[in-house]
Amino acid sequence: MKPSFCSYAVLIAYFFIGSIHAQESKIIEIRQAGGSKQDQQRFPGANILFKSQNKRVILFHEGALIESDQAYFYSKRNSFKAMGEVVFTQGDSLRMTCNTIEYDGETKTALATGNVLLKRPDMTLETEILNLDRVNDKAFYNTPGVIIDSSSTLTSNQGVYFMNQKKYRFISDVTINNPEYIVNSQQLDYFTESNLAYLYGNSRIEGEAYTIECERGFYDMEREKGIFKQNATLYYDNKIIKGDSLYFDSKRSYAAATKNISISDTINNSIITGHYGEIFKEKDSAIITRRAMAINIVEKDSLFIHADTLVATGPEEKRILRAYYDVRILKSDIRGRSDSLYLDESIGLTKLLKKPLTKQEVQIFTEEDLNKRNPVLWFDQSQMTGNEILLLSNTQTKKLDSLKINGNVFIIEKDTLSEEGFQQIKGGLLRGAFKESKLDNIVITKNTEMVYYLYNDEDLQLIGIDKTTCSALRMVFKEGQIDEITFLVSPNGNVYPEAELPKNERSLKGFSWRIHQRPETVEDLFDENDKTEQFPEILKFKFPEEEKSVQKQNKI
Image 1 (cartoon, rainbow, N blue to C red):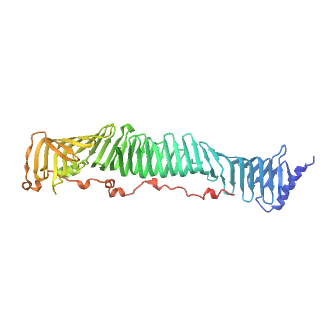
Image 2: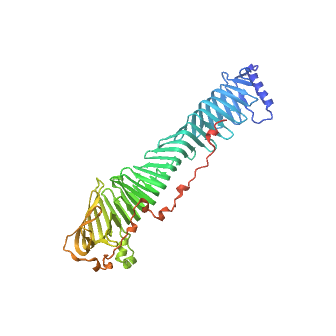
Image 3: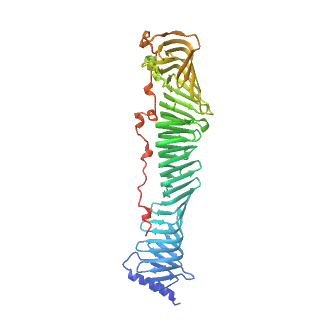
């Protein structure tokens, strides 16, 4: 049988190319074609290869096999344009189908258009236009693309696939759909083998029980954990957690935040701030330290509580806050200091507690030393101390209801009409009542003592200094000051003219005026130790060095 004209044409074209490029190693080979023709007027310099009934056009170049219905082959340029159910394969690692492909054998770059489907063992990519760079082993697109791997579906408007690194860089409206979560980002670098993602720009991750927002982030998509920075926010367990740096581990039900953190409790209307915090969802607890401060909104007023460490435990409806070491309290009408604090909002109880004494301190401390160690509260102008101070609030209205001080009660108020005088009352127990959140009256019992400056109502001249002991007395407050004192049991004492009572007898035993400890502003709640910046490894995490912008690489 004699060879057909088409077969001769294919052979002539093949040998013609071989003679011209005999010294080159990058020539495109024609492996198969049903026939060949030329149309120099419309396609100058091109051999037009087409399929026959039994043969499709097959071209080969440096490990890449391209199959199509028709191809315009430019031998001098060592390039071609193929169309019609194009199949591009590169060994067992890459298979791409499209409507049309333009290929340059000198640069080993290709432009695939129309229903592009790129498949690798670990993923598939669908888009309308795809640039393939075989020299640098990458593919990139500027049309909406969809990538499907073993566990997720990823979509974006632009993207680059670095084949050697098995890494994607997605740009513009990036979305990852996974059965466990959804990720949205402006830019995302995704490593297919390790399932790691790096987020850039406004990003959001929505899981079944959490939502994360950030502008920079690292996310292990298989383990559902990561590190997030720049306006990082975690919505978790009815809390809003913010920080310069966040760490989150969904499987461990654990989160940590570093520097400028805040934890907002949407149910209890409270915020805790600090520089380091940890949240344990399964234990219903959070620990905050380093410039830690709790802010509770009470009757449109803010109650600030600062301590070295704050610990919140329990479910929202039974939340308990514990504060440890150098507790400081600030409210519009209340100031306070103590070693530790216990707050249970479910029963409206706040306890201010002192640091336990050592055996040596018990032996050597004077009564004044003991009072300096005790927790202290200031209600307007009155300073109150004792072994233990309890504040009780109405659980419905959140308004202060009553006050209790157990052991070594000592009340001091600066006498406004004398230079060195102080109104003083001490006793064993104190019970007080509030009216419209203002201290209205108190009753002091057990070994009660008093030093009180008495003045004439008409000209405010000093009548004398009342120094009395009794079993119990009642005090009424007006506009934040002691207004009236009533002895409930027969008192024993005298009113002394000022000249007849020596100064050293004008102070009750254990007197300690602690006004220098009273915080007046939020900044007064902090000391030099709170300015020390010592943060864990979260802040030291670094992102991979960014490569050149994809927009600058999207042209072949």
